[in-house]
Image: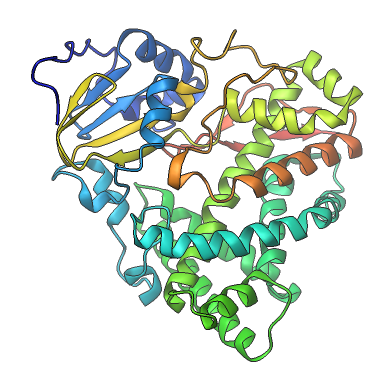
Length: 418
């Protein structure tokens, strides 16, 4: 409960009226979200968006405190009536039983979150470790398929690599890779809050195809286990892990959908940042061992995900703000990662930066991104491979073409010339 003897200071007037104005939904923020985020962080770090019914926190210390607070809930069904976060619970008609009834760890709360995430994470991280030495081969395979002197790096490189990697981890048959990529890209439309009827139709068809395929593979792996993640999950289930088939299927799909989009954005963003920062590109070419540092600085400087949210379950004070029970708190990972109180010269892209404090690109706490280790490995391998294969890579045009998906920041295309 809030301390009645210590009233919170009044909330300053925000320079904008809606948190959505800091995302790719807004044309100005699509090109440059950092100006508005900096203004909020400096003048109104705790902003109440009455339209979306959410608090919006932008300072690094406050964001870390919220994402690491295990007393806060995650599932949008806990939120007060009228909150825009309820859209996350809406399932379009026609989705398979798994997608209608089972829960994703992205939005689960304990005890179900721990029940599902623990065996999934254990099996997934073991597979990532085993796959580490093979990822370079997947990168080489993707790069070798590009033969034109000019191409779209997003479509031809940054999208295929994560899909190929997760396909190998899951155990997707080689002859199904084309379908698997099509389903993966279609299911990602589920992240779009404002979809057309055609996009919804594509999303439902792709999601159902993925579910059917995962359930089919699970049944096959029970009879004949293979060296893959799906075999691991059905084995853990047989050994007593309290997971339903639907929960395994939807969470494998969540790994696929969330991890593919964000890793694609991470790879393409890092390439564009290097191509627009010649000194940093020269440093990376001189020492490809900086790939890991390049990935971390890209995650700090322009991460793929804008926000993550939590729900306050009782009246309390957060970051000096009196927050009521069932109110939503949206934390800006992007604003926190450029907080000058934590990162010196935060608007400078420097792959040799000494990271004395952690960025929050992957969130934190119990819900820290389960795919973070794989994303880091994939992106580092992809960046080394891209510039080793095409040392003279350059932009075909200076203007960036950004996607319009709210709460994610990524390039719609990146035209390059080798």
